Image (cartoon, rainbow, N blue to C red; front, top):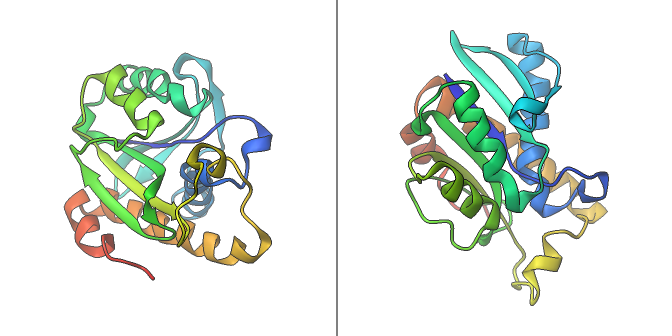
Length: 195
C-alpha cells in the first residue's frame, strides 16, 4: 500500500502557482487512474484533513491525498493519514515543488533533508522521520527569484502552460513507476536533467 500526498495550499487563489504543483500532479494522476484503474472520485475526509481518492494499481492499494491545510502545516494531515491508514513511513510518497531545482527537473529522493521547504519540514516534525520518498519538482527560472516566498505564489504565465502540463505528465509517470516497480527504479529513470 502507498499513500501519495500532493502538497499545496487549499484556497482557489493559489491554483496555477508553483507552490501547488504537488496537488496539480495528483489531480492529473487521479484523472488518469480513474479511467485506467477505477479510482474513486475525490472526497473530503475531515479525519485526515485531506481530500482523498482510492484505488488499486497492480493489486496494491493506493491512497491519493491532497491536504486541506496550508503548505506550512502539511505535517498535520500527513501524520493523520499515516495513522488512519496504518502505513509505515517508507510507504509514503510526497510530491512537492522545489525552488533549488531548475524548472521542469524531477528529482526523486528518500531520507534526505528538506532544504528549507516549509511543507516538508512540517512533515519531518509531525511524523519524526525523513524515511519516505519525495518527488521534487523543479520550479526555479534561469534567474533565481530575489524573493522566493512571493515567486512560489505567483500564477504561471500563459506561455508556460504547455510546459507545465508536460512536467505534470512526466511526474505522473514517475509516480506510476514508484508504485508499479520501486522508488529506486523511478530514481534511475527520472533523476536526469530535463532541459
